[in-house]
Image (cartoon, rainbow, N blue to C red; front, top):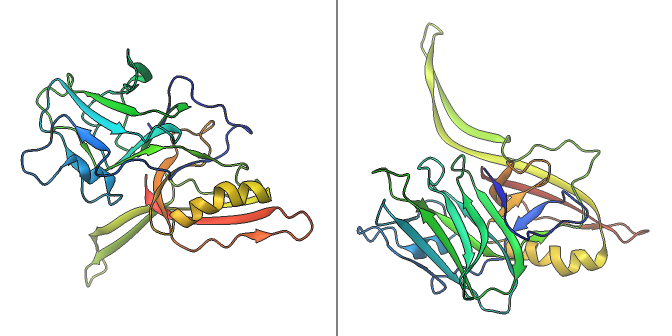
Length: 273
C-alpha cells in the first residue's frame, strides 16, 4: 500500500496530478515516541534523518506504540509519510490523529498496510499543533517490534500539471535498477548471480507550468531537493500503489517557452519503492 487517503483529504484539480512530499516539520526536537529499543542504536530521532540505513525501533511488541509530531501551529500539514518500515510485514495497523484538540480527531482510521513500501497518509489540511501516529501491536503476537527509517510530516506539493502524455513514463515502482555479478564456469555453465545493490529509477517530464506556479511552488522544491529526498506519487488517483521515496540524480533545468512563458521540466530520480 502506498497512498492512503484519510478524512477530508484534498481533491486535486486537475485530478491525478503528481504529489510530492518534501515539506517536513519532523526534526529531532519535534518528534517523540512512547518507547525505543533498549540498545540505544534506534532512537526516534533517527526518523528525522532522511538516510534509510538508520531507523527507529520500538521497545515493545505488544499494546500500542505512539509517535507524536509537534507542529509549529502556523504551517499547514496534510500528510504523514514513512519509508524503510516493517509495518506491513508485521501486520501493524496505523491510525493518525490530531491530538492538539480535545477530544482528539481521527484523520486516518486504522489502516493495515499490505507491504513495507514507502507510504503516504493524506488527510485534511490544517495548521495542526500535534499529530499522533498510533501503531496497534495487538496482531504482532511476539514478532518484531515496529521499525521506521524515515518519517515526514508537512504540506504536500500538488503539481499543476501531470506528466507529458506524449512521452513514455516508467513508474518508479517498476524502474528496477540492479548491480549484479554473474557467475560462469570455464565450460560456460551458469553458476548463479549475486545482486550487489538494487534501487528504482524514473524520469518525469512536464510541460505547461504557469510562471507563477513554477516560481512559487516548484522552484522551492527543486532547491530543497538538491540535498533532501522526497516522497513521490506520479498518478495518485489512478495508481495509488506506485509511490516511492526518491532523490534527484541530475540538476533539473527548467525551460521557458518564449511565446507562452510556460515552463517545461524534467525530473530524473532514483529511489526505493
